[in-house]
Structures are given as structure tokens and as C-alpha cells.
Amino acid sequence: MDVLSDVIASLRSGRPFANREDRAGTWHTPFAPFAGAGFHIVLGGSCELLMPAGPSLTLNIGDVVLTPHGTQHTLRDHGRTDADPGGPTSLLCGAYRLDRTRSHPLLSALPDVIHLRAQFGRHPALRSAVSLLGDELEDPGQGSSAALSTLLDLLLVYILRAWLKDEADRGAPGWSAALADPAVGAALGAMHESPARAWTVEDLGRQANLSRAAFARRFTALVGEPPLTYLTWWRLSVAARLLKEGDASLESVAQHVGYGSRYAFANAFKREHGISPGRYRLTHAGERHPGRRCPHHHPPGTGAAA
Image 1 (tube, helix red, strand yellow):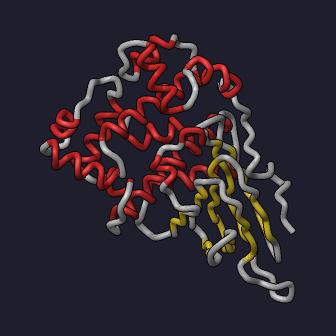
Image 2: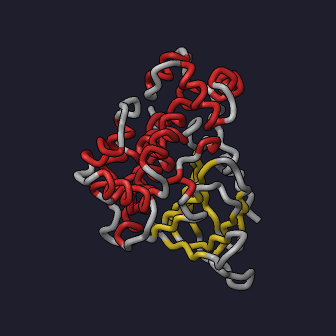
């Protein structure tokens, strides 16, 4: 798997949720904080997004917003008054449940709000997903539930991909730069593809076509930690997901993430998670079949407009 797909797979929990919201006149809709990521897409009209801190954002038709940390926020009509009400606004609102017990540093580095402005010719895949999703919600048919789930998964990938590209294009540091960097991106891909392999810094340097020392410096500068430190973290994050989602033996999980014995694995897991693998599995057993409905948004027709 590529790194972004792996990151999303490690975080997703339950099924996403979405509905269309139509507003007119003077209105505001608050969204409480929650353990997930929410999104809004302006299908028609315009509105404002208010966060607890910072200036408001004006959202116009075609704009896409993601709140990756589930931060509290409010949508309202675009600065109108009762005497001068705004025109109708159509929104596509939804949310994803995320498992934040082991947040990947890529997600942790995301801002509270990702705002992708509608620009002709930019991010065509994202625009196509938005169009398909809007059509499906407007006129659902047979197979709609499966279609919506798939389209929402695509939407999250395309939003994050678009943001990472924009960040890389403007030369921003951090994970956008790491994934865009041919050397570091190749090494990250290799670690995610084969976490059980007995990687050395020299091996990873070969993947990156760099010397051991040059690769180690470059990786640490972009990712924020040395290669083998990240590899250990990733292995034990994969192990945690396997323990929560399946019934594989501890020996099997240990081998899958590169540990030669269950005892070496248990010691490493406890150092990282503060709990033994067996107890971790028991503690999280109830999370294997999470509920489908996300509390971030109201069901269709019951949005808290005022």
C-alpha cells in the first residue's frame, strides 16, 4: 500500500455519514467537537465558517472544507441581516469516524481547517467525486448505500491528496514535503509495503538512492524523526490495528510486523503502548464493529438551524 492509503486505513473506524443541507435567510448551524473529521461542500450560494479562534472563512460555490481534528465550528449565512437576508445556500455535510488512539503524524500535522477553494482546472478528481456524491444524495437509487460509502471514501482521499499537493507546490515543510520527495517517499513506501522486513538505515538508503548518512539526515529533516524510529512506531501501530480488528494469534501478529518471537513483540508493544498486546486486545474488543452513525452531523432535515 502507498503511505496515504495506509494512513487512512489505520485511522478509519465505522462508516462515514453525509447529507445535504439547504438553508435560506438568516441561519447558523453549530457543529460540536467530536472524535473524527468533518467536511462541508458548498453546492450553491455561499456561507461563512467560524472557528473558536481566528477570522471567519467565506465559502463560495464549489469550495470544500475538511476539519480533520473534529474541531468545534459553526456555519452561518454570509454576513446578512434580517433586513437583508441572503440567498439560498446548499451544502453537502458529512463526517468520518477516526481512531485517534494512535494518530499518524501526518494527520496530527494537519491544520484545524483545510479549505480548498474552487478553481477551474485544479483537482479534477476531487471535483468529480463531489459531483457524483451530490448527484447520489439528490437522487438515490438501488445500491445507493454502497455507492455513498465508496464515494465518501474517495472524497477523503482526494481532499487529503489535494491538500498535500498544494502544500508541496508551495514548498511547505513536513509530511507534504516528505511524500513529494522522491528519496524519502520511496523509503516510506518501502517501509509501509514490507513492515516485517529487517530494514537497516543502509537498506532504506538504497531504496532512496542515497548514502546511509545522507538518507538519514534527509529523512529526519522531513519526517521529524529517524528512519528506524518511525519504522518501529509504524510496525506497532499496524500491530495495534490487527489486534483490534482480528483474531490472529500474538505469534502471527508479531511475525506480520517483523518480530521474531511473541516475547520480543510483547516487550516492544508494551514500551510503545503502555499495555500488553493481550490486554490491549481485550480492552478494544468492543471496537471491532463500531456503530455506523456519526454524531457530528444531524440526520437529513434535522439540522440545528436558527
